[in-house]
Structure formats: structure tokens, C-alpha cells
Image (cartoon, rainbow, N blue to C red):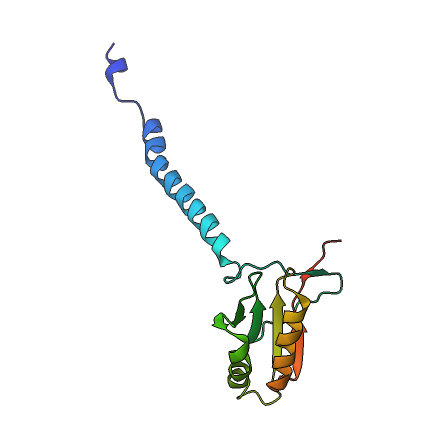
Length: 138
């Protein structure tokens, strides 16, 4: 007769203790999903031209970026065309073989600006130049 007033077994307690754990797991999942989006290459947003013969290169120390608004960045430091030669000489001063300069130019940048930056790089003694592209999807 008094059975209906007795406490039920622990079946409800299992669900009530699992709820906070599930919340924590979902919060961790959301945290890692959001932070993994920021692991991508930080820096300047440019649209690289595409090429079928593009190859992945090992990341080198010196990267010259020319943005769509014609800003020059040498490894993330803003430089002008007048300062570029001296900045490149400083960057490559300790490299015995003068290293590799990777030029990342937005596809909307006039060809003359890219050629000018390549010419200044050669004047600074850079012996190896590469132009960064994105691989075309077949």
C-alpha cells in the first residue's frame, strides 16, 4: 500500500548527473571547432593566382607580399619600394646562399609592380625567387 510513496531507484539520478557532463563535452566541442578555424595561416588576405603546376614549398623565412591595395609586406613588416632593397639585404645578410624569397602578390596587382619588386630583390642580392600560387582544383 505504501509502495507508491517509496523513492524510485537510481534511474533518474543517472540522467541528472550525466546532463552537466554532456554540457561540458558540447562546450569543449564548440570551443575546439571555433579555435581550429583560427589555426589557418594568419596574416594578410590576398587572392593568389592559380596554376596547374603549383607545388607545395617548404615555408621559408622571407616572404614578400604585395596586397591588392599595393602595400608591400616583408614577412609581415610594412615596407616601401624605397626601403625594400635595404630590408632584403638585412634579411639575407646571414644566409650564405642568399636563401629563397617567396613573392606572394594578389592577382589584381599590376604586373609592373611585381616586376619592380623582383628587380629590387635581384639588386639586393637575392639569388632564388619563387612566386606563390594556389593549386587549381582539377
